[in-house]
Image (cartoon, rainbow, N blue to C red):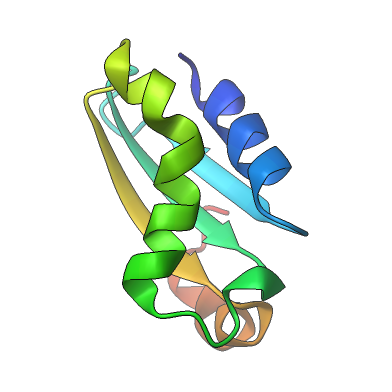
Length: 87
């Protein structure tokens, strides 16, 4: 599965989500995702991550080995987005 496929799955599963999926090792198996959505507002971090990983279960069963994950509300993203200059 390629990063664009993962991005589409996340954005379809989470209301108003913007997902950035990176393949820093270039192997298609160790990906990183940054997901921004107002749906995360007031939700504990573990639940936010579950919201992202649940729709990706089939990807983990296939070719994806690991997913580094960061989730943010739009307000929090505005505060820290400068830490991610490549996005």
